[in-house]
Image 1: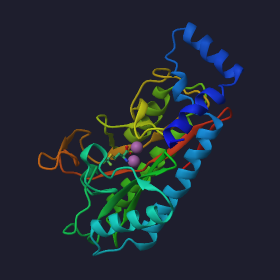
Image 2: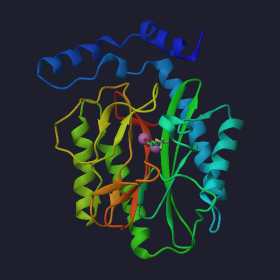
Image 3: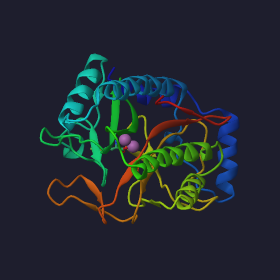
Length: 285
Ligand code: MF3
Ligand code: CO
Ligand code: CO
């Protein structure tokens, strides 16, 4: 049986628990946006995504151990590819919708989707986001971290640290039976208090059986709005936080890399999380 067929079969074999199904029905009657049952992962799916998460974390740890001033972002791509393949994984970005590399490496004013290249070196003072997505046995896990190269300015260090805090605050808001809008609200409130702006054009997403599934997880929002978070959902939270304007633009030459419109710095951290009946679990630690 193919990996996809196995994943598919689990939807029939492992049913959503009755008390969860009933609560979903009740909320639907009240007019709430309730996820399609296909967005509720079953125990075997969750085990698969957990395994993908473990490899993805290993990839990021390998990058963390080897990243250094003067190396090229292509060398990061090489580390990611080698580690992933040694652990029977596949780099999801590779040839995804024509993306040419296996990882995204976004430096300073690059918001996301920076493309690794031999000529692109890491300099003292740079901040770089490394975003990895790993497929294991057909399951996906997606996470990214920031790295500070050499001595960075206090301004950059604060951006990196407060962006991590934004992710933590977003995760804390991702409670069972809360909704997507609660996550964005919590993140944007905190970012604003720190004097930062939040990128609106890109966001987190459902993940696990595909790379980008529903729902879209905005990092701004209104409390009590958007899709209800049901135990069994797996989503990413991946705030992109800017020092200046929230506005971004896409690289006209490569069609991928997103930059801040004002050229000021941006940072991002990402985790894949599982909504549980009692809270949530980070699957990319
Ligand atoms: N990993 C990114 C995310 O967090 C997506 C990268 S798409 C790619 O959703 F094609 F650039 F890899
Ligand atoms: Co990612
Ligand atoms: Co993602």
